[in-house]
Length: 213
Image (cartoon, rainbow, N blue to C red):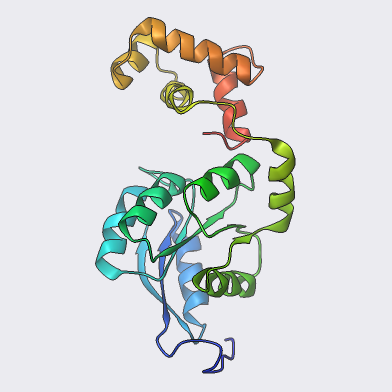
């Protein structure tokens, strides 16, 4: 447990929302953060679609979001959460330290981006720093993001690749996204070219590896 002085932290505990689909990881984070004198985990969710409704109910000071969640991703939920509760700081905590994810997190208004293999003391410190208005980013990932360049895919190209990820046909994708089959083919062709791959599934893998989806 970390010793805190009244001068350093407010009398009321920092209210934290956790979004993590792995039960063991979620429980461990809640337990460890609960040992901090100035923090209280007020909500735990396992599905991305539950983040904003839960946040509206408990009004957390900080939301700690995983990226890979059932339903809505943590990155998509971050953008909606920032609109719904502008005073809530968002920290992305993920296993996948990909530069593209970092860029998308910052574009979504996140206050920080950390990888899961760091010590809990650093996570607690990051929560306090985010609440104080600082931007907290893993330094190694920040350096990689600067050299990686921007996401080359348009939003529609990302939509089409996401729809293609489960092996859907062009017709299936067109129906799902309310597009014509020829338009879907054009988006797929463009995405394949931008990712310098040979087919749609290779494009999906390349885009995911770079954090573009």
